[in-house]
Image (cartoon, rainbow, N blue to C red; front, side, top):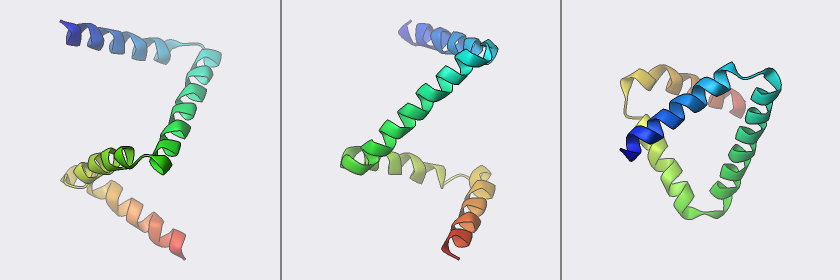
Length: 82
């Protein structure tokens, strides 16, 4: 029951963001950027956060449908080194 409620809220949120006027979307984007900044700071200070972040990314590496993304990431990294 709670899961259904949460899914309904998420679906409504996504729809509302998609249909929002530009200034409201911009506000949402700024909030998302702030969350990313906070997450970056958490990576710097929290071993537990780094471990969880690494766990998610390690899982990502296991799937063949991710191969193209991984190859592009490796290529970008090699270019960065040069």
